[in-house]
View 1 (cartoon, helix red, strand yellow):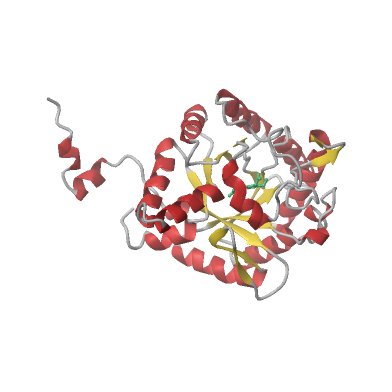
View 2 (view 1 turned 180 degrees about the vertical axis):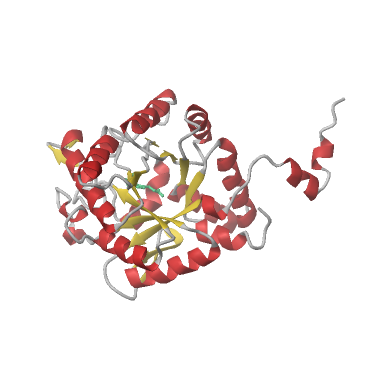
Amino acid sequence: MKRFRPYRKDQQTRDAYAEVSLKKEDLIYPYFIIEGEGKKKEVPSLEHVYHFTLDQLIQDMRECLDLGINKFLLFGVITYDLKTSDAQEAAKPDNLVSRAVSTLKQYFPEALIFTDVCLCGYTDHGHCGIIEKDKIKNDRTLPLLAEMALSHAQAGADYVAPSSMMDGQVKAIREHLDANGYTQTGIMGYSAKFASDFYGPFRDAGNSSPSFGDRKTYQMDYRVTDQALDEIRADIEEGADWTMVKPAHTYLDIIARAKTNSPEIPLAAYHVSGEYMMIKQGAKAGIFDEQLALREVLFSLKRAGADYIITYFAKQAANYFETIKL
Ligand code: PBG
């Protein structure tokens, strides 16, 4: 008989055999920015997630940095009247996200700032690309994404993160950044992003639901696996410095294969809005303890191979981690 129970006999022994660790530096915290001043409004679909005006965001970011979180992913949220079919607010000089980035970088040069680069929050139809005759036009969208990324880079973003799932978006952005002298700005590709029902609460937060149809012609079908690795490889070849699998909790197989395939490239897993709310609601329904369930999920993502985890739980987790052992 092989005895396994000695590995588990007490906490110290279990800790000694643990193969994965989780650090606060592994967490990336998403933020939603709105215009104005003095506002911090909870997003109805996403408990404890807020729409922040910049002044409020500065306060919150300071709290996060004090807690040990130093990576942030920014989304701009604009009002409907500013949205157009060509998403012109996304890249106009002095746009909301770029203004926020340059201020945040002045306050917190030690923070690593990622910006989401996608049109869905800026188009009046809510799709991630430019539309012609009801079709999302891939190649027409690329220059706009590149322009949006450049404006974030000029403001001081450390990484731009294209999430529109247009083919060639990483290459278009890399070339445009380089041509304008922003060779040091990195790219985190949302490389393997699946058309998921778990994005629902985010679309309320981002004010970015498609007004017709769905995203299945550009986001991946969740019945494929090898294609995810092809997407990741293509992003790396096009110049992505980091890659991503999204969603996370339901895509552990993809995370594991991605890490095995490209071990040298930092891999982020996006624990998305619906996955976040499942834990919140499950805990509320008394199914499990929120902290313990969260700990288990975050470790599962690390065990699968994620280097970094993008999660709405980041701040809360950093607080918990003071009380529960990582
Ligand atoms: C923008 C974008 C989405 C998410 C991140 N960037 C929404 C979508 O693709 O519909 C989802 C994040 C989440 O659910 O937490 N394209």
